[in-house]
Amino acid sequence: MRSLISPFLNNPFMTRSLIAGILVAVSCSIAGTFVVLRGLAFLGDALAHGVLPGVAGALLLGAPGVLGAAVGAGLMIGGVNLVTRKSRLSSDTAIGLLFVGMLGLGVMMVSRSTSFTGDIVGILFGEILGVSRSDIVQQAIALVVVGVFARVFARPLLMLSFDPEQADIAGWPSRRFETLLLLMVTVCVVMSFQTVGTLLVFGMLLAPAGTGALIARRVWAMMAWGALFGSLSVWAGLLISYHFDLAAGASVVVVAVALFFVVFTIQAVRESLAQRRTGSVAPVG
Image 1 (cartoon, helix red, strand yellow):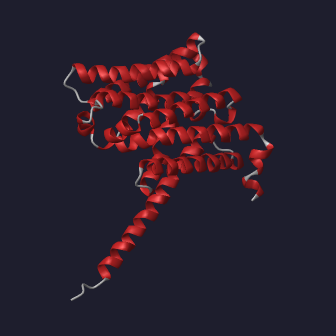
Image 2: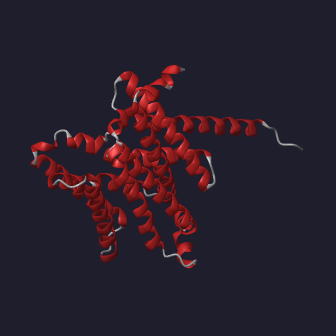
Image 3: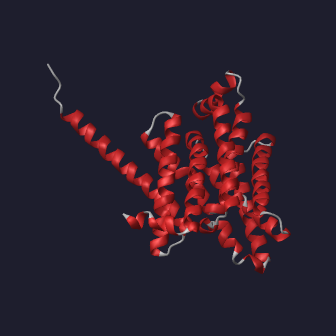
């Protein structure tokens, strides 16, 4: 039992990592719930990868990586909206084109400079074991922003997730609120990439929220379950990383995905047993 707690009590960097990871898990669970319900997984993936050229450009110029990530994500969202509105192409096509283009541009920028050898690993996979107090403050601010946003725009976002046409009829333009939803996801991606990296933040957006969706039927309950499973993933992933000397960010996301499939399997078995019991009951009369 002590081995499950002592790493966080005896190592300040583990304590900071746990706090930062839980903040990431909660904020990503809130935004990720709407991503799962709205079916925006592909766009979430594109955003997570689209920040790469922005971060690379910022580091080359000596600017903060968060600023570059915000610029990259903004270009991604703006480009998707522009292509969708000014052409006959679907949003999926626009997302795919910009996803590949931004990722390719990021790789070109990285390959152009030899100084990215260490930085690129941190960009892609995060540095959860190296977070500072300022990083925790930034992540806490991001959580507050995402939480307030989800609360203030709860009704239009919920209606958008289930019936965009009904949202238009009710006076909540679906295009406008979908853009606002993307901005909320962008805040999570931009503020979380320093902790879990651009490649892994997508997993934190989907896995805990998807697990919550398997259990709960109400949106706020999905968020709560997602936050719980996400926090558990951070705790277990950090412990696995500490005891077995594995990559911390990757361990967290692998645990989150594993928890999803554990819950999925349990739910599937329960449903199968329920169907067998129902089928075995002979009709009366």
